[in-house]
Image (tube, rainbow, N blue to C red; front, side):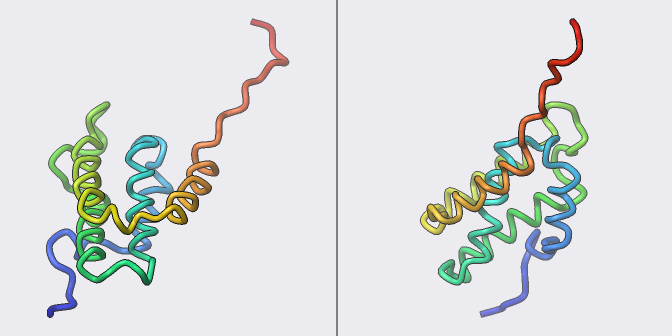
Length: 124
């Protein structure tokens, strides 16, 4: 079996993934980031088989690839294609998205999407 990444899997890198999320997490939105993190953490698990990691890295590679079907900078719809690709990968590997992975994702999401404090010391 060929261990070399294929297709968009070649575009995946841990650095590129962290950069994209660090820069665009809020723009991508909660749902896209949550699914991307589920997949990312599942790929790190030793319990996830190689075939599933291949599907995951392909989807995450598409997510970080600078050119995609709908440009990410397009208002409102920019991450729609990314969400579709991530959702398809999740449907394929869902049995490897454990409660531990969901908890880890929830903790990360809590840090990244913490509510902005409302200032109450200023008059209306």
